[in-house]
Image 1 (spheres, rainbow, N blue to C red):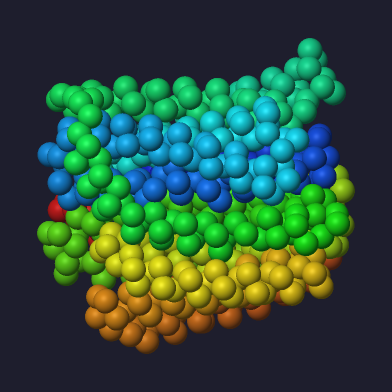
Image 2: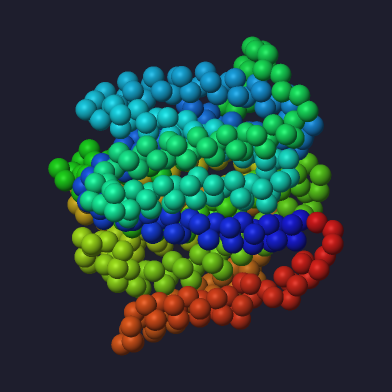
Length: 482
């Protein structure tokens, strides 16, 4: 299974690295610079607001479906049509409740068409993830990797025309971005639906009330889990908007740093998406392989996360000024604190995926309740004192506590022995990366050259400390049995 994971994650990263970084830094960043920090901050506030209630629309169905289809692929013809019918009812409920909350939060003036189309986009995103969960559940990992970038590829094409074609020069408004997302997500959902349909013998859309109720009941724990995760990771922008007079501007600053965190977090998300069906299958068929796959994936993602986080931290101001026309040292401080969160979130992605595959939802939810309470308290006091920078501090502290909680819970449930060698390896790698990157950052050469050198040296250190074990990689690649 390690071989399967390694080969597929390489392909997954390769496909996404080709497309998503250009979208994030070429399109999304440019849009913020064109429309202005405050206007983009409004967009961030509203998109996180509609995302906060997304759980009503998704209701944990994606994770539930991915786990069950990967373990019982022969049942897809039964699950697929009934879940689609279920999502129709959930979509209606989500739309109504979101509109009611928008009015209650004072966002009435942005309801139409701004929030209206954002609601449609969230519905389409949920549909795309559900359709992709069937693709990965059936074992088509490479196709799922390709499907993960279709909407971004289309969005790059459309927004490039709107941003840079002479016919639209100087006319771009944030609403165009929202409308473009609606179009590209619709096309993506249709393409994936056609693919899934070809691999299902019969699709019977007969309304089955008992089965739909069963799906909702079984998805409920996953829904609660996602709700908990959403609240403690998304409440920051809403609190910034509500607590500060210039909340929209501060949200623009905060998301300036968060965009980079979001870009690198893509790796953790890709790992999780690939690992969930693999862990679920191993739990059912071969539990002896769980710990080796867990350690291999954890070690691999940290070998990537640590050099990136430390390098960006030491070059925080230079990166911010390069990317944003309004950036200054304050923007850099926010970015520097946020990027360190990548190490924690990478850890959470790996361990929470294992726990989700095992169905350990209730115990995970208990940890996330602690995270929500902690994050709310930290955000309240730190945002009032330090604004967006305070929110970034709150995010780092909360993610650190959550990462520790996920590791300890996994060790308890799966009886994972403490690996002193691995812990020592990670600590040595971290210390060496920090010290070498700091030394590089104080040199007088061009910072872009120094930043590149720090990343390369991070990769070399990962090999020297055997965070990336070349001999082991050769062994699993040459192993025929997956």
